[in-house]
Length: 319
Image (cartoon, rainbow, N blue to C red):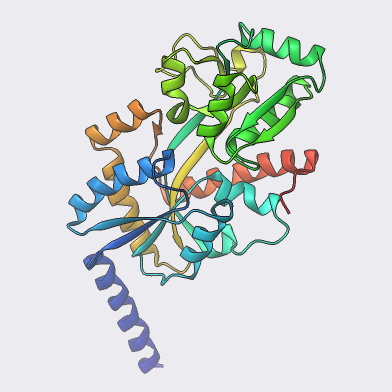
């Protein structure tokens, strides 16, 4: 018995010492999208300051594919020592399990939340020459012509896609979905008039909005965005349940010790709260967050209940 207790105490001491010295080598930060997008920008912005704080290199590794499943599965199989972390959005952690009958990873069993870094609120935009003057006008015309309006998205199962599906349900609309491989080509066709509308995050759409190439009609956020103070929320228009954003956080393999998770959380949140980092995030169109693992876990549970119901009700599947 004494020998058993001694072993347990020894292991606990070793774990504590490991957490205190963490990190002692470079951290690999996997991003499940190609370089240049919003998730990539967010990871690189935070990683630069994180590297300075911990005095270790933080190496961003882009691993796109499988609707983020490729990177998620690779992270799940990595050693649970805190040296492999993943930028995960609500596609990775919330949507995919409902969209695919079989998945190469389990968000709840294989991955542990560290912190939500930021939110990319969704915005309803239309082409400058689409003829839609306001969100009320857009909804009225879509309702008057069921199936007569097509909309673009950044991809099937993306936050952009599901945000529009949510609007369709709440406003009782029937529109046809045209998925693209990313927000940029979808926006290009909205600008060109091939399709009249889409939901887009500010990070991807800001330049098009500022340049007058698309018109922002409403934001799927509880409050108006400081970058678009004249654009109403859907709640102001009578659709209080139309709230949607790309939620990008950090997760690690599920067996990672609580001590290492908490250390990562403190360091990443400190990096997010660094004034220059927050300014860059806001300028890019990201709402900075930086919460605890418990708060992030609770958010994911609530988001899962909300979005899985929508996906089930609409019978959306990507298999």
